[in-house]
Every structure is written in structure tokens, then in C-alpha cells.
Image (tube, rainbow over all chains, first blue to last red; front, side):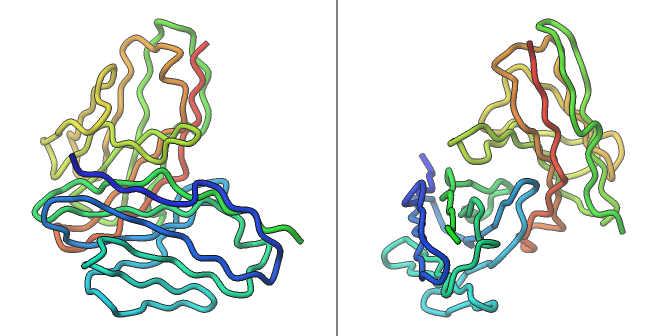
Length: 111
Length: 113
């Protein structure tokens, strides 16, 4: 059965800290991995990763995929209170119309 | 462009009542999805559609029906609501097979008493 596992499920850090969120997957014929940020409303798209070892970066957020280890990490440097959210990882198996979501990591940044 | 919109935003039902949630998108996307989100459970796929007139079951389809009569609309129906269907429902759409980003609506918070 295809699955996506995120860790940790919950994380509390202080403003200014750096955090690393993990996502591992087991799917048949991997196609792509996506990261979303969800505050108190709909998830918003952060990154899509398809190739191993190529870092995607947007401001203080970055992500990289390791196809050998079947995993991805999302890094957030110099965290701010506005980074508090649920971060969702999702994977598309190849030749499939549906995406598989992990349960998310709930990140809380203390001022 | 409004993107993906959902109607209603909030609803309270009594057990056994029925209702329909409407999702509309103005991006001409072929694919549309209905998810439910419960605390600690992430997003779980209920039903999805790969085009007008077609629907398919997702991970948790029981108790729900869907219809895609028009490309821009995707309806989710609850024929006889149960307390276990209390959840936040999200609709999403995307362009085509290799355009992977899904665009989400704002969600509908449904409570079944």
C-alpha cells in the first residue's frame, strides 16, 4: 500500500531557530513530491520535487529530494512566528491521478 | 480569477439530513478532488474526477456521492449525514496529468449533530 510518513508530527521551537521537517514515502513508481503549507485555511503550494539532489529554495525555505532514501526534507531557517502552520508532504505515484498526503507536521514558533 | 471556491463555508446538520457541497473552479482544470481533513489525519481523498462526466472513488468514499456535470463544478453529496462526517472538507483542482500542483478551495466546516 502506498504511504507517506512525516516526522515529527509536532514541533515547537523559538523564533530564529532552524527546523528540518522530514517526509518519507513508499509508492509504486514515484513521479513527484510536493510540499504544502497550511495555516488556518486551505493548503498553499510550496515546492514540487522530481529529481534527486536538486534543492528548491524560496526565501528562508528550502527542500531537497533523495530518491535513494525515498525521502525529502523541508528546511526553514531563521524561523518567524508567521511560519507557524501545518506542513504537508504529498507524493504522486506515476501514472496515477491521485496524490497521497502525509498526516502533516504541526510547527509552532514561539516569539 | 477566483480560483477554487466552495459553498457553503460553514454548515451544521442533524444526523440523517442531506446536503450538497459545491466546488467551482474558473481555471479550466480537468481534474477535481474532494478531501476531508480531521485533526491529526492529514488530507484524505473522498472522490475525484478526471473530467466532465467522470468520477472515481478515493480513500474514504463511503457515505458520499459526487457528480461532475460541468467541467467547472464538482459536487459532493451527503445523503444521510452521520456524526462521523463532521470534518473540514476541501476541494482542489489541477490542470492535467503532468501539471502536479493542486489548487485548493477555502474549505467547508461541517458539523453533524
